[in-house]
Image (cartoon, rainbow, N blue to C red; front, side):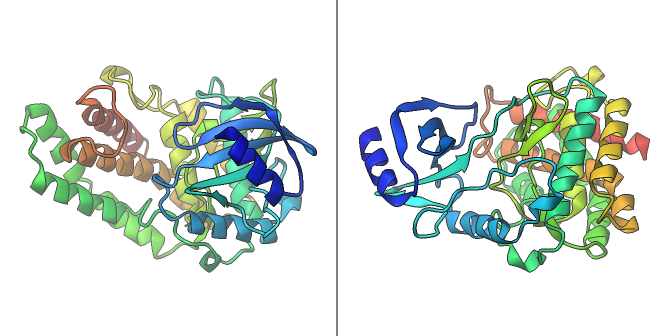
Length: 341
């Protein structure tokens, strides 16, 4: 099979691939990813999973917009976008499979922030990504996943899941349902902000492992995993950083009494995001950032709980109650964020 890939790919790109160099790369769970040697240096080859991203043409459209319009002079890091083939396409179809190449970036990925410096650098980089595309019209980008960060939509989906669930109503489940249904005020605040703020290019998946740091973790070398880039609001990207970096426990933890906000990391995220966004953030956007942390925690709580009620059909789980426990984890984090204001 590999020989068939390489033969076809070598005909469709301006560089040649050394097939014997191919080796699996990274820890991603969506695409098949390989590191390969080519005639112009190392590259990342991905066999794209279009069962997960069912409209790859929207991703390719957004990537081509960025390739043609991104202001690289604004970037202090690399943005390894797909390399177009001889036809100018970022995806290459071979039989029923899609492939793409991206530049290889040296460095290291981490799954957990160890100190405030790393938190600062992460926030600065993700804000810098938004800055680099501030001049591009939000209408230029297609919606890769409709309603991805739409809190109102996710609230309605949760209500529907509650109506249709076949789960037995335990006291634990009842507590979570009541808590999340009572977040109507947060949903209304979301509607207020999106009617007030500008749409911008946003990453929409600002987990720490979507950055490549230098080996000594002193700088960010690249922002990666750009399949979810589309038009959004600055508080989306800041909020997901808060949810995944500033929580004292990871999202799978069931140590309820230990779940809270690491205020030092939270402050570092805010400082870094404000620094990276100082050329574009409006006063209203700055005011919306604390809401972003609460909103992104809440929306994931909605989604985890709805998935549990629907029979665990979306998120990968290791045991039946894991989505229930993820929702409970986010309930405690959201409560801690609400105390902060």
